[in-house]
Length: 139
Image (cartoon, rainbow, N blue to C red; front, side, top):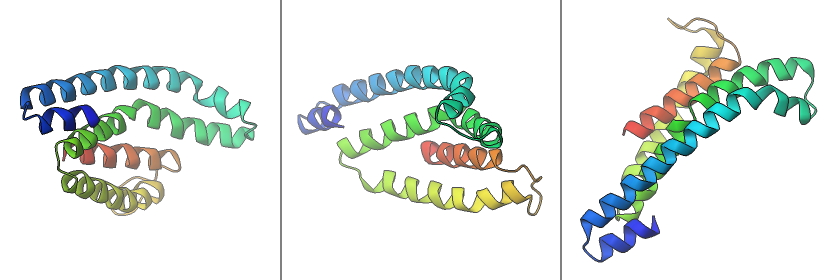
């Protein structure tokens, strides 16, 4: 955010674009690492933390989906901070609010199988979170 703001303040919009693009590239690389490592370490991490076997099963499936979809939060945050650095704090705030409300709406639909959605249980709440973050990222 600070680097983008510095370039925008200097009226160097090409530099601001370059800084934002480099941040996005690094975010994609980091999110791939988090997704790969997190997917395989979700259940062992819960065991290390002392979770009960049932929690390890439910929490492991939840965390695996969250880790695979981690790119949505990485990219959303990077885009939001780039926009804030460029002086637009309203767009990321609106996107975050919409994503939050969408997550709140999707959670019961996925968990309990309401309307056209199949009953998917606890792990589906992570799917709702990833979808909501993705919508926020796109906005």
